[in-house]
Image (cartoon, rainbow, N blue to C red):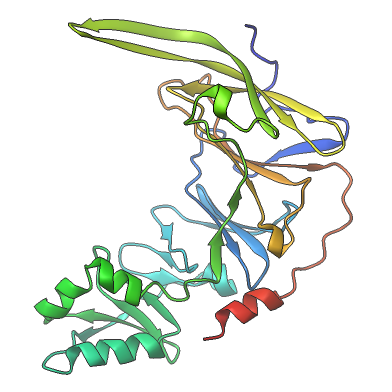
Length: 301
């Protein structure tokens, strides 16, 4: 099989659809893809954080080396927190340390702090952290061993989830499951037509044979209106590619797709990663996003 001429990184698109890459580097890994139901924007985390509207226009970016993002939109380093995804503030705050609650009222005090907090970040390798009355605080020394152990349990995770737990939701995955056999996949949107091997090896480990191969998959994305986007995707041990859409209840369009690919570090000259939007070439100008009424309703206790 001959690989298609273009990857997503080089694709000219089709007559009616364009392909745009968000990441400046085709070797970038995608790490996080959330939708802010209150601001009606996409939050993408690769080598940067991006704010993107529903049709794939970048609204804002910020550098994120060594940073991560919680599902409630709070960006974190190992010690500091940032609310850029929520309000555009790029400053980082070090929470004030306060002692763990002690004594017979320790659990009651924690419960009260949780319910007073605008934001809550569970321990998960750190310490309980809250934003209460506009101020970030974190439980510190001395520990309360009993409370500390409880906060590491599944029961605690269910009773005291990340706050807010429903403003930022995952983007809707709509691509096929490449973990199942080809004849069992839903190929109505995206289909792999075949595989051109460029590297392979086979080792005989006694009763077990080890087979490995890497190469190009020819992919077809079937777009509304009849267009078909053809592109090659480099994969090793499978197709590392996901297709997303803004959730329909928040204005997700049938003709706007986000595709995330993982590059392969063993084949930097062949594989391409990065995150892309595939959308109609001619879209009406997107107005500034307005706060979502549905998202606001979800925030009410």
